[in-house]
Amino acid sequence: MEPNDFRNEIMNDFSKLKITIIGLGLIGGSLARAMHDKLGLRGITAVDRDSAALQLALEQGVISNGLSSPDESVCDSDIIFICTPIRQILEYIDELAPRVKSTCIITDVGSTKGIITNHVENLPHRLCFIGGHPMAGTEKSGYANSRPHLFENAYYIITPARGATGDSVKLLSSLVEAIGAIPVVMTPEEHDMAVAGISHLPHVLAAALVNTVKDIDNNTGRLQTLSAGGFRDITRIASSSPGLWENIVMSNREQLLEVLDQLDQKLSDFVGYLKSGSSGDIYNFFDSARQFRETISDYGHGLLPRIHRIIVDVPDRPGIIGEIATLLGCHNINIKNIYVANSREFEQGCLVITLPDMDSVDTAFDLLTENGYIVFRDK
Image (cartoon, rainbow, N blue to C red; front, side):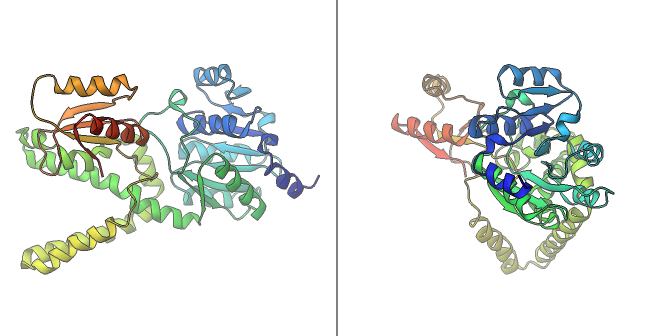
């Protein structure tokens, strides 16, 4: 059977695919579970140095083979997903490139595509490489936190390298769509500029905001006490792993520098408006941002993890938090966090409840409303 004939056949029956996943963490584990549950794949091989993750996946029947390093059976795969940090992605590509069969698709889930694609295209071996970036995740990592529905209705960016054929791109796109994600094909350059603006820049800004407030606090602790509400929300990503973000921003340095230059110009313009007292320009500055922000959907997945929460407007009386927590618990709604917002200039109520997902938000909203509470969905 010719390669194209085989690929046309398996697009109608993905269970024929021989899949290897290198890196059985949150993303790799969720890919394995999605393909097992949704596509009926029963021959998935996983490669990971964490023997406990491999053992758990084997016990669950999600994978059929667990390895600590790639062997010759891996090189006979139809598709290899590399789900590791970028430095390890490059190392695995170097190891696999001269060994895999010519029809094998190698793909990854890294958050930066240009550095990987350039590396692939400069290899002495022709490789069918298609970059991938699923725009989904959770605050927790590891295989134990993986879930088969993680990619449902999430954008999954696909960035083909020069050695990738149209049929290979079509196959990977179809597979991504079959596990519930939304494939979007673009160039590595387009992808990296996009994530520089909507993911990498916000993390830099969040860290800069927190560091600025820390500096002007002068060790009094007063700003730290008052830094709740909106400030707490827009800077929560500053709690992300420093090592992870050092690697990410360095891998996308040129694009990030470009968007930082544009941000610097925006801030310089605003400083000029403020110094000159130009109220019209200041109004337009905020109004332009408001108009564009209102075109962005409050639903669906994005590159930044979303907060799933409700805000309840309740009086301060004994037992009120317990009443609400008990009501939600009796209906199997898991509360991730609950607190009283002491600083709430921009809040619509005082009791803030963080939940695991949007289904929980919708259920909790309806349940509390039916029981007479004033509830707001977070926007």
